[in-house]
Amino acid sequence: MVSSSSKKKNIIAQYNLGWLYRFGKGVSKNQVRAMELFLLSAEKGLLIAQASLGSMYRFGEGGKKDLVLAHMWTNIASMRGDYSSNRNTSLIEREMTDLQISHAKKLAVKCKFKEYIGCVSMLTGLPNNDIKSHY
Image (cartoon, one colour):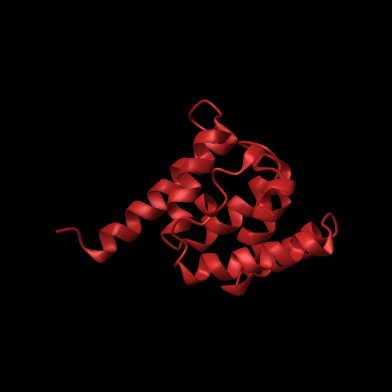
């Protein structure tokens, strides 16, 4: 049986490995892999992984730029007490329509209710995974 402490260390190790891939430190830079690892950690509730996903979606690192998902993840991190995510959420909103902001906030609430599991898959299967397909 794996202890709670061991599980927490594994979540942090996943995040740390993602960070290495994101910035190419000691490994070949691979932002797609970084995003995968951050998502695993974010779904397990790691605050810094949630904030990092918001940043990656905001700038299109590891995939297509997605302001709705960027807002969702930074909003979640902000609600959980991450001050920099609060500021980042405000900056992201400057690039969004009111409809996009409203949708992102609803997604954040749904994601939090689901305890962060499957948050991105709430949007999977939608064509192009772009902002128009979020509605």
